[in-house]
Image (cartoon, rainbow, N blue to C red; front, side, top):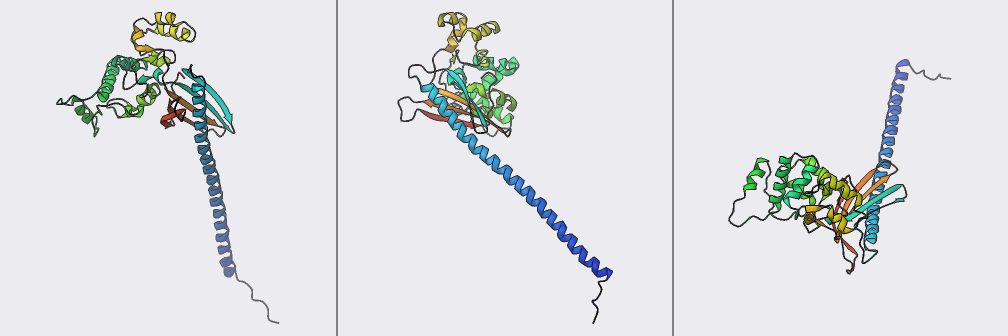
Length: 298
């Protein structure tokens, strides 16, 4: 009976090498699949939380609109609420738009005073206020545009609008204003108040500090009494500042929404709405901004 041929050392090594390559390939495929599965799971969670955030933000706006219109004869100037839904905690704050500084109507002294209040040097604050005034002011027929040269010096391919700000984000188009400063001050500006006065009952302290004649001492007194003091007593604390303030609510309101998920993800949004009590809808959305900063005095 013929004997089986023996596998030589060279043939044995020839077989082992492909086996090792196959094992290495399988290990690589396993690692790749594990990474793919992990990334797919993370992307799914991210997509799911984005969808939840959009729905929760809309729910917060609906709740804010309800609180603003619940009593037809008494609109709250501001308010705050929070709720939990699934793995998310939602915090919302709303306030009337005239508690903020209107970029289209605020006097130059208020604009400059605001910038000083947030730490800008007085000369720079005055220059920033002038740039804002120039952006929104109409150019007289036949007059030269002196601001256009300034914009060219800053490397801008455009000049000032010479018309109303359409959105607060347009502040970033104004030449000479540092980007870091703009990000910090945007929560205190609006384009939907429609009036130069500021609602003294709901304005953040940073906005009140911009009003001429309101000393730091009077500001602290005002903040401590404005919730409960009679109007005549409160006005007595304002002095010459009275010409810059109002006590009436505006139909335009800003809703700020922050959502915190258990995963650590956090989203923020600002929604400007206009109340329409006798319309087919209780409110209309004027602007919707995602991932926006909150003011420090909400």
